[in-house]
Length: 405
Image (cartoon, rainbow, N blue to C red; front, side, top):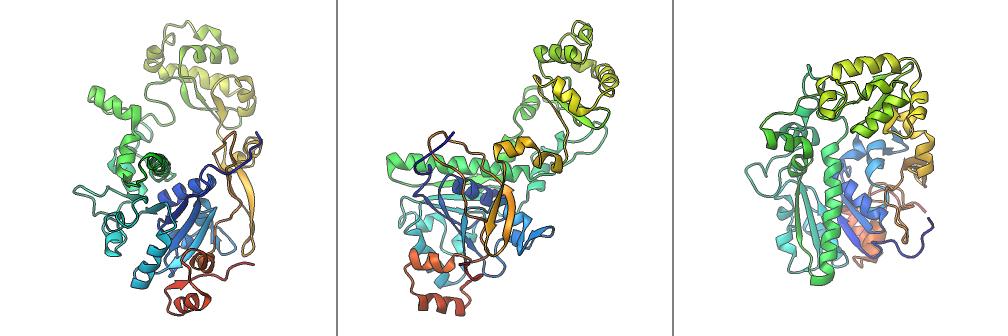
């Protein structure tokens, strides 16, 4: 659907001190909705992900490219009094501050919420930390896999007779970024009526616990640990990855109507009324027998043909990243797009998931080189002259790549 007018967050400016995934993914989402993001980075190397191993596009790592489109970069030493003073000048023009340092770091810089709230009463201030700003573990560092372990999430993952496994993606960071985006939007919405900002304390641990969802309620309702079921599901059958003639097919046939549709699609309607499979409970209790029958049938054709025959059901082939990201499905939805940066060239990144009927979303601004926008930000927002900026660069308080032109 064609859109026109201003993006939904046009006019909102964010000062972004975050790095790695949770914070940067949040501010990237805000950029997709039209906010101006000024990413404050350490002059000595910038965001940790700029130095990540693995594939690069020019000087940019794949890790940094994943979470930083749509942003401006200012490489500023906030550990110096001059750097802190510049942050205060920038905050005069900002609506939101995002940081994910360990609790106490921003206070050491004089940039914590309590130090800023009276001077900037409309500021929405989001802190992301491993364990929150209060509690016995608040001073501890924490990374996504550790939070998966401590929250109980890992105990749910893996084969029944195998060890717990972590999710291979940074799932806690990703979920935290979504909650962070929602919390910022809620605070901005509240500010419309109160004319005041507020502080948001968001903990990876809290998000991981909340993400347990129905599995967590399984325990809270029964006092029992849900069983690990590998690719199957603890209470839904048949939900599993099944072998076909050329690979795996995943199906999530979670209710009676869907099960009946699957039985007819594979040519075995008699399974519908089989006492072993006639109810969800019966199918779960007789999972091994049902899976054996299904395996024998599904092995007779390819995953693509079965997916076509069961197009009306929640069934799909298990794809590699190449099969998924080069598919027509991804292309049709615009979820992989090509961007260009004068200092990098053409490269592919993900598109935005936000599709609004009346206002444009998405950004054409590529992920920035370190400090790429320093001169423009300090000149246009902080009001510094060229000589002042040059002096800051000479003293190492500001650094960065030469701005493309």
